[in-house]
Length: 360
Image 1 (cartoon, helix red, strand yellow):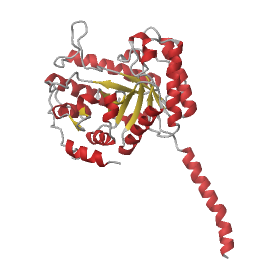
Image 2 (cartoon, helix red, strand yellow; image 1 turned 30 degrees about the vertical axis):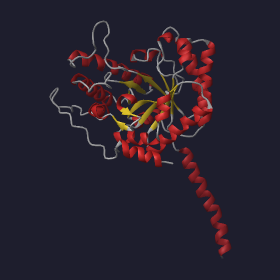
Image 3 (cartoon, one colour; image 1 turned 180 degrees about the horizontal axis):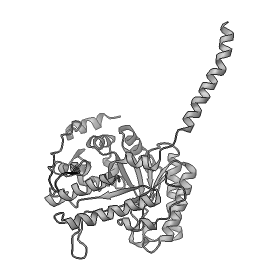
Image 4 (cartoon, rainbow, N blue to C red; image 1 turned 135 degrees about the horizontal axis):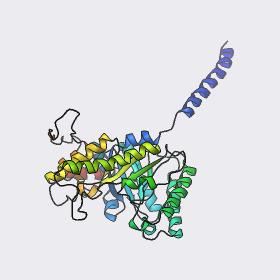
């Protein structure tokens, strides 16, 4: 009796397992649009670029970022993909996975940006081949931002940039078809240049655009600042640039990400009222447009040596991450900024040092 029952059940169990496996295999992969929604607000970081950034990095820093409301980091990398550098990148990615922060690796490609020759084009492709093979199909939320801020040298070399993007995307996706990849236009601070990007056919689910707006704040141009007190004309000009990106997204079916913006230099000074107003406006407009963004940059707001946020800049950072935005029906300009909420998980430099010394 038992033997018969076992014999009958075995095929049934096998069928159930097969059906389960089929259902799992049929589950849709994460799309670029879904990925962009998860990015939220992040920050540009030098954890793998400068000697100081590499030396000061501790996994607990990622926990501090997550506690502050940051949900992705744009990890800038320079230099050859040596074994030591790849191991360090894996350490960063694993820390991000541990604390629920999405990592995006972005390559500086300094030599290529100075001289977009055939040899330097190949160097960029080879760099990403090494990184793509190293991570394989692991860390599915890890994104690759192919060239950190294309330079002025590339303004007249659209064909070269398109070649590098095409070769690199095809190579990476041969290794991992689901890897999320970002590409930026020649004029990385101009959403107007998005239309010059040559995007692979049917790549809407895996290729995103990266562009900037005010990467170092509203700097003077032709004797004028694009932001003073937030006049109606200044706000309209910024909205027009964001709308350019929105229209490009609607036309192409691709989504985009602002890889960095800033209210200006603030390390040595407390933020001005003008900077606070600009930060609030920019953050609210990008959130309204549902475009994820990264804040530029980590050393402005976080003291890696102390393992703590810079107190004078926390109100500004809070505004950039979670602004109090006007709601439909509000009178223009009628709002109050809430004081930053105390960070319950924040530790003192002494406690952080103690935790770091006992961390595995």
